[in-house]
Amino acid sequence: MLLLSVVGGFGAIILVTQFLFKGAVRGQVVGCICLIFSLCVFVAPLGIVRQVIKTKSVEYMPLLLSIFLTLSDVMWFFYGLLLKDINIAAPNVLGFIFVINYPHSSLGMNG
Image (cartoon, one colour):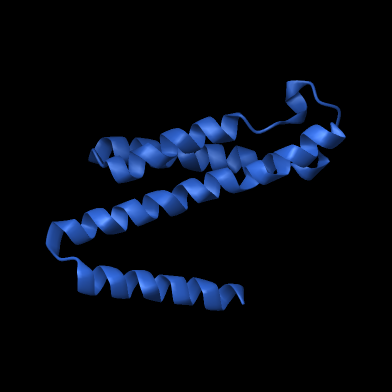
């Protein structure tokens, strides 16, 4: 089901952008779509925050995920900054803000 959703979603994006947009506008539309999906990657783990706060335990919050999301985020931000591409840099600024706000055992919660 997940594979079908990914393939179907990717196919829909290709069809819409291929036939409805031309030239530089197409690049901007694809950039905005990628920006939205990039933000979803950083926001998705926030769904666990409710359970972490409720149980006062970080056992449900994977620390390695947060560490590697942060590293990836910083690298992509600087890549976008060097290219002067807002579609790469912007979601990574927001992603960094989301990632550093994830609860961790180092923040004084019992774990």
